[in-house]
Length: 133
Image 1 (spheres, rainbow, N blue to C red):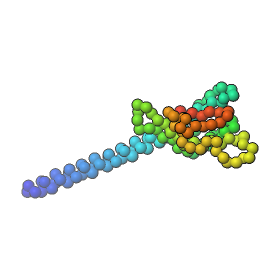
Image 2: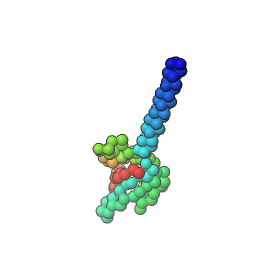
Image 3: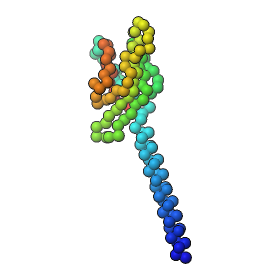
Image 4: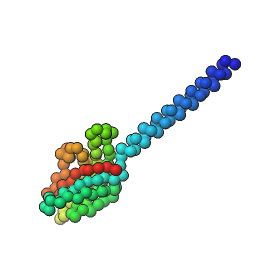
């Protein structure tokens, strides 16, 4: 009789352990998905008129801003709350190019805290990464 009680208690502990482990796995996968956003916010400065504009880009869609064609491929927020880091993969084409080549003016990762790591170099416009949502 004592042996049957120990087996039942062992099964209950095993079920509890399985439930606890599955909750842990699903909670980690949700936090990783929350770090990636569906839209990217950038600020564009027109150096000639000295006006800036906040633009919300949907990831994967192209957006035409005056002479630029901007596409945000992916954006991600950092895991740390004290000093948030936002990264985004952007592709920017200059539509005034006479050759009509599909050459990107900028094609790479942009960082919100350190724009000088991969600078966007254009004579008329400047782009800063503001947010990822």
